[in-house]
Amino acid sequence: MRFVDEFRDAGTARALATRIAALCEPGRRYKFMEVCGGHTHTIYKHGLEDYLPETVSLVHGPGCPVCVIPMGRVDDAIAIAERDDVILTTFGDMLRVPGGRGSFFDSKAAGADIRMVYSPLDALKVARKNPDKRVVFMAIGFETTAPSTAMTVLRAAAEGLDNFSIFCNHVTIIPAIKAILDSPDLRLDGFIGPGHVSTIIGCRPYEFIAREYGKPLVCAGFEPLDILQSVYQLLLQLHEGRCEIENQYARVVPWDGNLKALQVIGEVMELRPHFEWRGLGFIAQSALRVRERYASFDAERIFSVPGVRVADPKACQCGEVLKGVLRPWECKVFGTACTPETPIGTCMVSSEGACAAYYNFGRFSRERVKEATQA
Amino acid sequence: MCLGIPGEIVEILADREDLAMVSVEGVKRVVNVGLLEDEPLAPGDWILIHVGFALSKIDEREAKASLEWLTGVGDAYTDELKALAESDIQ
Image (cartoon, rainbow over all chains, first blue to last red; front, side, top):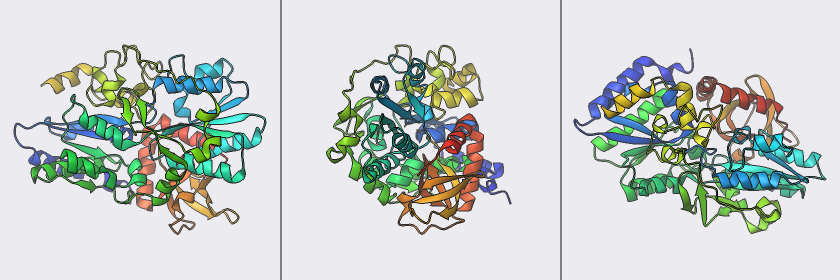
């Protein structure tokens, strides 16, 4: 038996599509946001919108960690990397992200010692091997990644490594969802909740979305049928007048999350008063910084970073794409001035970015989709 | 870095209980399992790995489905596997 059949069977997908269509009230339009870039990927790759009635649209949210890093933070990291005594370590995804003065790639080409690592623990190894250098890890990501950074800081502390620090850019998903709910630009009917983030935070933190905003959320897996099933569950809730948080991905996501992971994040990091998100602007208590007691592992305290704000390029509409207000192909520079090879905005850099996913897997021409969405 | 990759535990390292030798698509690498300290782990178990750390224990059915999903991701997965192969977690 092929294991994936049950998650991909076309017959089951068609049956779900029929049930989805039956739940749609005539004349009503539905708009659901998938928060996570991995879901965006599945939707485009498998053409899932073909299975949905025209009145149901999926819009893409801010759940791509690379996409939401503001240009100023890239510049700050490069300023650290340009010091002679520093080795900056980063995930490969960050290398091509444009800052105001170029990317990590550009800085590396100009002589900065910037190295790609798979894990923050690999950055720790670089620090052990280079005791005469100060090794900084560019920490990015949502709650999925923050526990790994926190565990690495705890390990560095246990080993007494004094030449390792993190430049902390971890962000938290809940304030971003709240910012979208508070945005007047977009009226949503519900959310397809992120998969891997929820593995860590569980489902409880989403409860305010149902309670305070009256919107349903279904945490979903990454398979095509997971997403169709989640859309079905959202529509069923609306049809029955319910508004709840449901866990479609219970085979991986525990309702209470990973308590150990939450505990280590809390041990090492605390909420920042505010943090700038690309496209979304400053959002209160939406990011993490290193606690005072681990100050010696905090690159922001060790190095004086410029901390400048850099406006996004005028042509770039990543902000609107990240908020779900624009779909990728509606951006003025999509596929012309901005491509995965020469990205202007972050949404085109990361493979999880909505623009890159659509560019790589979009199955319709822009004109046809525009016609379809305007119809 | 955004991907969660399934791996099968080959052994828990005797001198470091927070580390496990894991097989990912046939490549054996050390992964930190410290975030799963409350879960009993044994060779043959599947875990979801993210940037060198196990985030959750999954069943084989989910693992196989995830692997197929990842294969469909293309370059991002190939790059991640390449980075993982160069990883040397201690």
